[in-house]
Image (cartoon, rainbow over the protein chains, first blue to last red):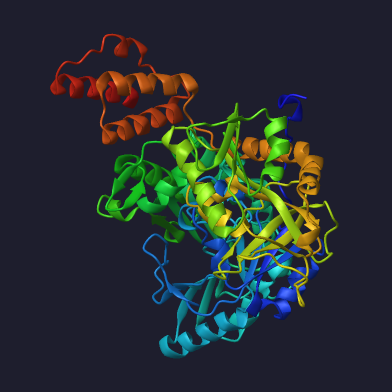
Length: 350
Length: 277
């Protein structure tokens, strides 16, 4: 028999076929609850999530084909100051936390693939530690703006982890806390079963159909996301729309015009708290890693500028894109609700 | 090239015969074999021997400019009865019992083997009093993995252990070892080829083979420095990303014969300009 006749069939292990569990997280009720959802998964005991997550020489894109779940206990760093790349919407005391690392989706422009050494999904099961940290910080700072879902998409994982419901309940009892839950998910059942809270902002990242289809693998379609937004808006939740990153693909003006019109046709402007517009911007270190992992990405190998450690569209193009989309948005939504976010290097130009 | 690492000759023999491997005579300290897309090294028994043999083979091929796509440790292991005799086990966690270091191999690719935890011991383990569930024992795996991950991405490293005994090392004979391995030879080769195919598929460049040839031609003709090569490749990828068209460099390169550094720089700038258009 020749080697050719032993031709392999390509196959990956199933999503979460193996679950790494930190010894200290093993008996946590959330761990037990999550494990019951995967009765066939192989449980691999570990001492620290970093043993698996931070292994040297991993291939993020390869692991995306078959992600594993890592259940861990966060022991420190329950809270981070917001970074300059992320919009603060004029809130002072801007923080974010990381209840989970990585996401179920596979967006070609996502900074996580440049930031993390592994594509496996880490969930910190001890939410009580995060809640306690916020409670202490609110006691000191009186008010606090917290982004819950930066290095992950918590709403997409809500069915599995249940963090969003717990944080909604927590925010209801802490008037100094404003929360942002950013998502591309269309799974909004949790939000429809509780009364809306004006201090909890549900932020949807939206892209035109063609971009969602080509660059946002695994995400709900644009239509499904708009429908989800409509449902929560009708229920009374404040909604933030994030067209970020805006990608100047072929025919981008019409693509984004159609998107904004689709949204405006079904969602009342008063239901929308902000519209956030931003172009692709990322630290050059992360960008280098992203290009390494996605050598066939036409999106990442476009011409970008690297200024002061920030990779973004050339300034002229960035201005053109942002200002044109802003003008389109202003035709449909109140001007005061529209925020622009751009690479730090081009602040002056705009 | 796919490299197989075994500790013993009886573990190696079925692969040597099946893959028609020939001894590499320039290596005298170890038995190193190769033919076509496979190679094999026999390291000898124990953690130190495994680390030395694995490193030697990887360094040998690296020096020859031969790319190793996958590396697989195939060998026998003892079990307490959680796995049946002759069954094939893929370690999902490896502990070096000498150093207590723990390693986690990649488990992205689905293969026909049971999952187990591997303890690599510096000495043979016979009839242990307490032995953890689903755990097998060998004398090389941890050292093999540690040496391999210095050279290769972890997804290209595989361990396949065949249960040879229930912690009764005295029952193992050369013939039985060879027999155990021979039963699984086809399956192991298939698994290695699967791993190779899957890991190669993930490294897809925007540049085609003919683009690569053109760039190589350009690099040679212009005697580019490392920095210039990187710049050229970035421009080429950006051109491909923008246009999806072949690199338009053939005619430009045909007439390029720089004799001075100034000429070289001028031609390179022309090339970059064409790619930036």
